[in-house]
Amino acid sequence: LALAQLARKKGFKRVSTVVINNDYGVGFEKAFVQTFEKLGGTIVNKDKPVRYDPKAQTFDTEAAAAFAGKPDAVLAVLYAETGSLFLKAAYQQGVAKGVQILLTDGVKSPTFPEQVGKGSDGKYILTGAIGTVPGSDGKALEAFNKLWKDKKGSAPGEYAPQAWDAAALLTLAAQAAKENTGVGIASKIREVADGPGTEVSDVCEGLKLLKDGKKINYQGASGNVDVDANGDVVGVYDVWTVGDDGTIKVIDKVTPK
Image (cartoon, rainbow, N blue to C red; front, side, top):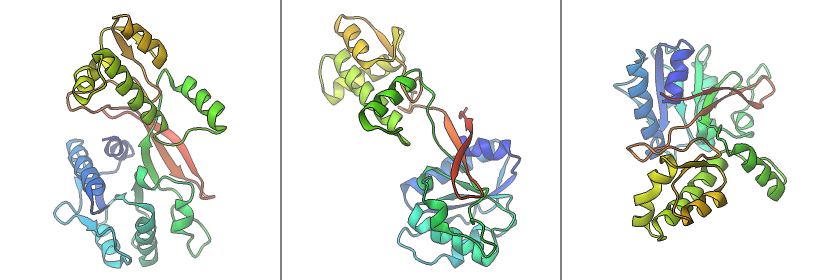
């Protein structure tokens, strides 16, 4: 949802997709296609989606197919090892020239631009590519970052605030249910995440209130962690890009609607 909205916001009307053929890639592709079309965009290769074998080692055919039909941008849902080979093949064939590359959390790592490599002009092939990754903007974020730094001596990476909030919700729901079971937690998780009770960001404070029979509304490090009807939490996403020097920088935020 976030990446489809970002693509439309940037004015891309025609997008092709290439994804790793597993639950991650195909699931992402389906959600992107659905949202992008709802927003008035066109998926150039909708009838012939490019889904590559996770064990593939050569990508000439896939690269040619993904960039055919003159798309404004190509959504590439990849893992680093095979994704770097695919993007290199697209560059070497010359098909990626002038086409915006849209990436996902699966390849957001400081080493990925280096893995894809540099072109004949000495510039990073991935320079200018943009992507999304789950971000964090919760009321508990500052305290969480401080706690992490005190314990680990560094800043938390991707997904750490989400993992923290997941553990917090499990603990709080178990306390609210007065039983540490799957059934008990399931019956109370929405109540502690988005209930009518006292807003708390500190887990220990929340546990104390619940123990006293009070209701709470946990506000997490990643966001407000309100669980929707599907059991999902919709949060903010960071928009990242690859600079001229091959480093990854966060340049914007997008909240799926």
